[in-house]
Length: 214
Image 1 (cartoon, rainbow, N blue to C red):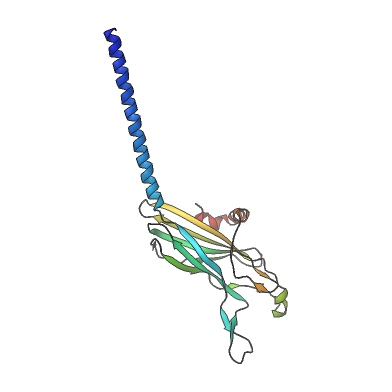
Image 2 (cartoon, rainbow, N blue to C red; image 1 turned 180 degrees about the vertical axis):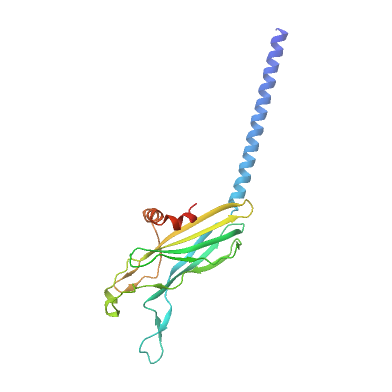
């Protein structure tokens, strides 16, 4: 066989081996970097909500000679717990509980969330709103209460924070709905808003909700 041909074949084989070696090295580096990114991402801070509902303060019953306490028929608060369930703390934490009414007689309310600047992983905070009116200010009176219907309101809990390891900013928002008052019964639960309701709220209240969108 021609010597030059042998040299050409040997050179080609060597180049092919080198290319294969570079390819596998690049793939190994890519896989290693991907594993590191996944490890970092899996440890990021993130928040969840639980036990959110409507609570009503107690007041002394009218005309009660024994000063018996009953649930306030006109006021309520939204309360619940927010928790960082990530492995790492969240830094520069801020947020709000927003009350977005269905009935136009009520105003939008915004209540800042009181969380420390740094939220350690696995730590819970009780958060809530101030006093909310269950009846409009022009409500005709107690005699009308058994027949009153309130369609309720939406509750949006929004949180902004950073991962201190990567300095990556994050935002989360949780959409809930209070079912309201029907036949004189005040609902004490919150239910998850559906996708259509969330999209509508984001469109209607974009200025308020934009900071909490990912």
